[in-house]
Image 1 (cartoon, rainbow, N blue to C red):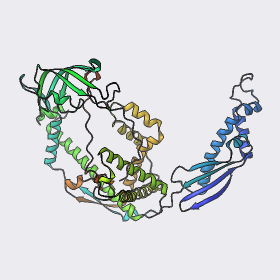
Image 2 (image 1 turned 90 degrees about the vertical axis):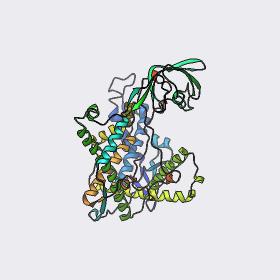
Image 3 (image 1 turned 30 degrees about the vertical axis):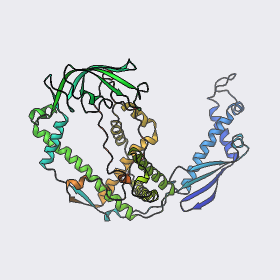
Image 4 (image 1 turned 120 degrees about the vertical axis):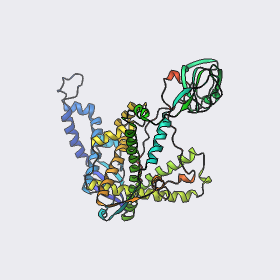
Length: 494
C-alpha cells in the first residue's frame, strides 16, 4: 500500500492510497481457492469446479468484493497508522477506470478526504465548582398534586332527563355517519360515551351536541380534515345521525381513603407518600438539568481547540432546520422577527460551536475512561423510547433494532449522562436552595444557548394528550394521525 498526502490544511486531510494490481490479483487467487469448493456449476460435481472456471464465471464479482474490502481495510489501516480520528465519515473517490481495476489491468487508486478530531487536553475536573438547585417539598405541593390527580379521575353522574348538555359533560350516543348519503366503515357506534370538549372527534362534532338532552335526535354535519388518516374520507363532508340517550356531569373524585384504595394504595397517607416521592423525582430531574447546564457551560469555557468545520456545519443545519420548522408551525416568517436572518444565523452558529465543543469534550472523557453503555442500559433506553409510541410498540421496536443509526439515538444520550455523572463525581457540587419558580425555569432559557424560536413565540404549545382508545367501529370521527416513524435525530445537547 502506497500513501501520498495531497493536502493537509488545518484539520482537513486529503490522502491518495494506491494498492498494486498484483496485490489485488493475489487476493483474487486466494479468494477463488477458498470458494471453489462451495460453488455449484452445472456440469461439475460439488467441490470439483476448476479454479479457472470459477475465475471465468465469478471473477468480476469476486474482484468487486475484493476492491470494496480492500478500500475499507486499507483506509482504516491508514487512519490507524497516522493515529487520526475522522470527525465524519471520510469521502472516498476512486481514481481511474473501475473496469480496468476489476479486470486486473490497473492499480486500485483512490482519494480519501476527511477532517480529523484534534487532540483535546482535558481540564482538571476536580477544580470545577458546580451548583445544584434544590427545593423542599411542602404539603401544599402534595395537596395540589392530589387535587390534580382527583380531577383527572373524575366520575360522571347522570343528570336529569331534561338537562341540556354543557361543555365538559358526557353524552351517551348512538351514531351513524354518511358521506354522500352512503354509510362508511367505522362510521357507526352504539352507546358511545363522548366527553364534550375532549377533542376526541373531528372538529365541529362535539360542539353541535352541546345543548342536547336525553332523547334528542340530531344530525351533526362536519367536514373531515384534509389530512385525515383515511384517504377515502379526507376533506369530505359527512352527516352523522345521532341519538342522545343520557347526559352526565363530571364530578371530581373525593380525596379520601376510598380514593386511595381505588388507586391500589393501602391508605390515603401511603398515597401522599407516593405523591411526595413523585414530586421529589420531578424536582430532582429539573435540578439535574440545571446542574448539567452549569457543567456544560464550564466545559465550554475551559476548553479551547479547533473544531472540524463539517461537524459545526451539520450541527448548525440541524438547529436552523428546527428553528424553521417552529416558524412554519407558528405560520411566521423570519421577516416577522426582531432580528435579521444574518444575525440569527450568527447566533445559531455560535450555539452549534458550543454544542460541538462540549460534545467532543464529553466523548474524550468517555473514551479516556472506558465509559460505555451496557446492553442492559441500552435495552432499558429502547423500551422507554418504544413506550412513547402507544399502539405502535412492535413497529417502533423493529425500526430501532434494524437501524444502527437509530440505535445511536438511544445510546448517545445514555453515554452523555454517564459521562456527566463521572465528571460531577470529581467536581465540587454544592446544593443551592432556590424557589420552585426558579427551579422550573428551563435550563438556559434566558441565555443564548436556547434556539431563538422563542423570538417567534414565548412557548411551544404542549402536545395534546391523546384520547383514550376506543374500538375503531365506535370511533368514526376520531382524529386518526398517520402512523409515526421515529424521527432520526441527533441527541439534544444542553
